[in-house]
Amino acid sequence: MDRMPKDTARPALDAGAMDLLFREARTHNGWLDQPVPEERLKEAVDLMKFAPTAVNASPLRIVFVRSAEAKAKLKDALSPGNVEKTMAAPVTAILGYDRGFYDHLPRLFPHADARAWFAGNEAFANDTAYRNGTLQAGYFLLALRGVGLDTGPMSGFDADKVDAAFFAGTNVRSNILVNIGYGNPAKLYPRSPRFSFEEIATFA
Amino acid sequence: MDRMPKDTARPALDAGAMDLLFREARTHNGWLDQPVPEERLKEAVDLMKFAPTAVNASPLRIVFVRSAEAKAKLKDALSPGNVEKTMAAPVTAILGYDRGFYDHLPRLFPHADARAWFAGNEAFANDTAYRNGTLQAGYFLLALRGVGLDTGPMSGFDADKVDAAFFAGTNVRSNILVNIGYGNPAKLYPRSPRFSFEEIATFA
Image (cartoon, rainbow over all chains, first blue to last red; front, side, top):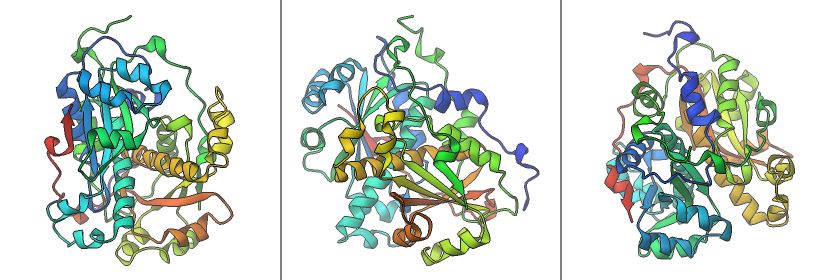
């Protein structure tokens, strides 16, 4: 077909799905005493990975911190305000990005020699890793919500300490931490205001 | 309640919604001759804005390019491979980020003087704008799919030219372009490979 019928005939999320992902979902600070099934985390990763990145770079790397030993290593790197909720979360995901992503491009982007666009161009490669790893972090937060989990993303931590503890000897750099579990609604703060459409967007 | 029942009782997206957002959605290169209702674009922005950013910074700014004059201004900034599909798209969104976001924090983050954390700390403010504007770009791409639109994100353009043409005299910097419309499935490329779960994530 060359034309679709009318706009309203296109598939779209129903109102419940829009609420689950965006309108009713909240950033959680307290966690119910309920474990997170590993299968849910796998399902969220296997959704996230299909969303687009430049040259299919796919630089996001994730460490799911669950053990007491790994939680203790993470604790030293956290801003004071993030310690208690992070230690209480069933899982804390370290979202990093692989600055060496381009070595995988012959497999991930087989129809051009995209590796050559980045090898030896460190500033461009690092920025591409950071931008696209952050895009994937956005996809992943929504995928986690999509499989029924609650999230608490944080940027208040010492990235050098996290890198030394979890990514030593690799090209991966830490970007965002995300507490994951089933949120305790009693510990939510009131939702902060948002911009109006007109303050965000214009037509040209 | 302090405990939820069992995991399977939590609301989650159904398989059709997961397909629409992630598994079946594709980056489009060709467009059907069908206009995009302004209402759909507004709906997508008004979903995206509820997803989280650090200190509720909300730095994403969007210009929806639709007119012939604005398309012509954009054309000069595009990489050669992006010209034809962008000129043919019903709408091209310029996704930018506001490096002056912190001036809005007294309103968006009223419970602390977060403006003071960024004012006079330009490197930190710029990085926060870039990271969180990119996170919001990820949310927005999924929100566009969620309202039934197809997308074609691109990073192949001259950001300085786009900034000069669309953001002169502001603190906004361009980040990602997104063609928006109803994709022509006949012009899709085969989907490129993705990593396995184990190549992306580990447990610690």
